[in-house]
Amino acid sequence: MKKQRSESREHIKRSLWQQNRFLILRRLTQVFFLGLFLAGPWAGIWLVKGTLSGSLTLDILPLTDPFLLLQTMLTGHWPELTGLLGGVIVVLAYMVLGGRLYCSWVCPMNIVTDAAGWLHRKLDLKKGWQPKRQTRLYMLVTVMLLAMGTGSLAYELVNPVTMLHRGLVFGMGFVWGVVVIVFLFDTFVSRHGWCGHLCPMGAFYGLLNHKSLLRVSASNREACDDCMDCFEVCPENHVISPALRGKGEQTPLILSRDCTDCGRCIDVCDLNVFEFTHRFNTKINHHNENEPGRVDPVTSFAKGAQQ
Image: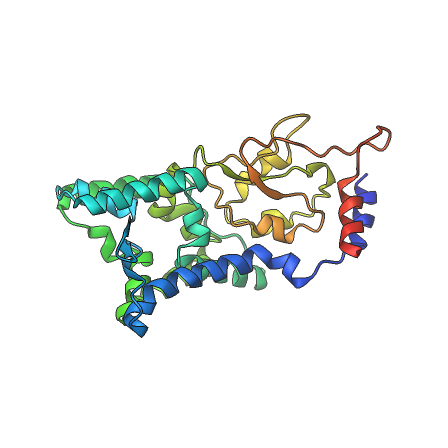
């Protein structure tokens, strides 16, 4: 069966767009959001006032980073009503769409860590030191305790996301040092180390990801030929196995809160194993040559790619 699938792969020719469409869309989205914030201080076009931490769009829509909002409340400083409303709007949006969508589609540091991951693979380096994934939860608790104990937003002084965004607006200066440290750490010390193991913001948004609607599904998992390309590029590759290796009618959905919905597994899979869907779609495309009505997903995709 695997030999047959490998032979089918040879007939699949995908364009550069098909191999990188979600990566390209994520970059465009990240640049778009940065552009909205930078248009004011750089060009005097104030569609959005503020930063990723807190903003006002068109002088109407308040948006507040709930991670920062929680820290602020723990310092003993109660935010204004618009700040609370902005936080509620963001929380509800990410609870529906997926909390870690922020990590892969909005966060500017994702560009830095993705570049580090690409260089790590290009240099064919070893995986390196891998902290336990719950370490970022400990980091999250530490940040909150620090805010409570010091009465200040202490973590925001070193938060790479905050520093990068403010640096782009007011000038980078020593902020470049923080960005370079994260880049070097992910490249030479720990593959996907910052986002995958340490970032407390990622841990926080992961908590909003538990029941979100948007999901990646390995609906064509019977087409998998174990090339491991998806595991290689996924920043949270432990989330793939339960969906991809499931037996029988076990759900093909990636349900882990750690999934960032980056879509790279969809991009790199020549056999069209993965797709974006919603959490209620548990359909599995079965392959059985002897059963009428069943279609080989590999053959079907190969024919479509040739047309």
